[in-house]
Length: 315
Image 1: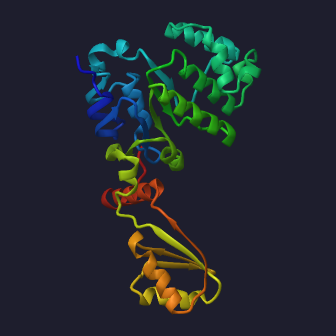
Image 2: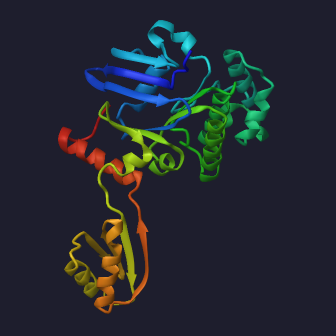
Image 3: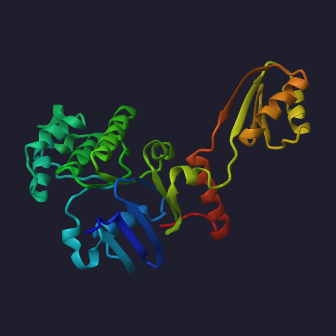
């Protein structure tokens, strides 16, 4: 029997709260082995989608498959092998970190022996016997990550996983995501940090006002707005003369900040700009090329959506 390539699939997914359409005809596919980034502004419908995938919220329409099984027909069984970190992890305040882990191990039916190891993995072993009610938001988040890893899940669903974490532990979490994916775990996570998604993900979806704008590889999404690379040039003097030389050479998308000049230009045209500066006897101190980023594409797509559909202020 051929193994199903997608681990999450939705078709025509819809959900409305108090006459506000939170998710609107959403169809997406997460392939086995992906690190999949789920992006969108506040109120785009990301958390609602995740809760519907996990059968925690019932959709008003559409279908969801996990491992090829329709969750409407086999809800409980489809959740086996999933690790989940909600947007705001909450635990019993009077339980210690290790008691919390053992509680979730029992719920999942997995070996409790891994609880200490996982707390150590996220740096919480020093506080294993402290009550969760005494923890900071970041510490609670780390316990949440540890419980999501119980049982070595084949699918890890993380809703804003680095929320409340300082840079050090954000880096640890990124390394955990890469390690788990290297062992075969599919990772699906939402994030507001576009740099984080660009660093980790191979595929990405952008959601806005409840519907899908684009789903593709990070490379294709990043280049999807036909963004040009930016050539950043630092001249030793006479920046106004340098700008004029660049414009005379036929390049109009120019910005200047002191002695630094930025030009949007195709990669094949960089030499023309440098030659124009040389011909104008402008001394170039340094130059570099900045490729289009996922953030550029995200703002482009969301900007187009705002123009087409009005101000973005979804639920």
